[in-house]
Image (cartoon, rainbow, N blue to C red; front, side, top):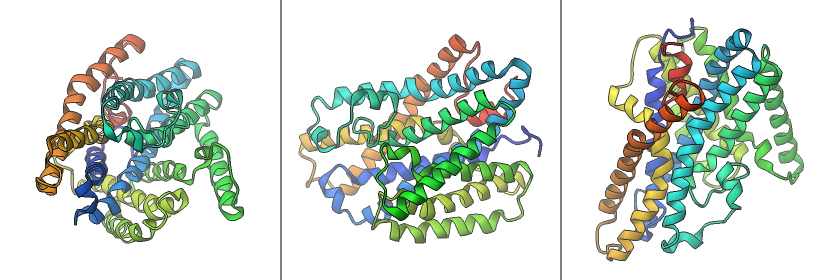
Length: 367
């Protein structure tokens, strides 16, 4: 399949689904009555797997981006290609994250919940290096893995411009081997996030990208059904050990790859395309993802000070929290994220940065 034939609108829609899964799972974390709400097991058992879908999508996207970058390196040189790739990732992630981080820091001056989190050094949190857990922007712990993946990809691009995947696959092999040895022999590895098995979900995304690029769509329905079923059934054993990245890879990573493949393949086969409103939410998914947990904690504190907890129905409070969190994310997308991408892109790259990597990777953007 020729790169650029499809905009992967279904992948954008799936991003929205993943963001909403994570958002709904966090609705039941902060207000005491919601911790015993009847719906909590349903949302918190499966909702966090939206993160794994995001990771697979990231691998899928980076596969296409690096193919363009490898071609670009032959035209403008490896350093220019490296700079553009790294700067785009930086602009997409850090400026908005720092704004949310600053807002969360101010909020925690008066929030009674501030002391309930495991704290990390501020510099690590700001740079998203070894920032797990992230007690300021709770959902941003995943960005540590994203930034790590992008850094390794950028380094491979700089060192092996014509063999980017050789560097990446060498890294994935190292992660896999160390993860297996650490699990089998019970090794305690310093900075263990560097070899966390969950990183292999990016590799699964690259594999999905290869299949889709080759036009493989015959098994889209089977893959989608199997992926959803696998994810739902495997969520139960994961509850017993939710911090095991290896178990998470098996229970959620592999089915996430099947879901991403099936979703993309349906568009490839021109069978089904996600509705426009879901694609729109997918475009705003990064803002929604970053803001929602921070907003939930603030709204929960307001509910507590108003004396609504234990008086107002928890389901109503959850609904209000959800709409506020989603609304703030959408406002952030329009009035923060997009202007930042446009302004910083023009400043450092000479042109605006797309609001999502799919657009820059596969859509017609005049490049």
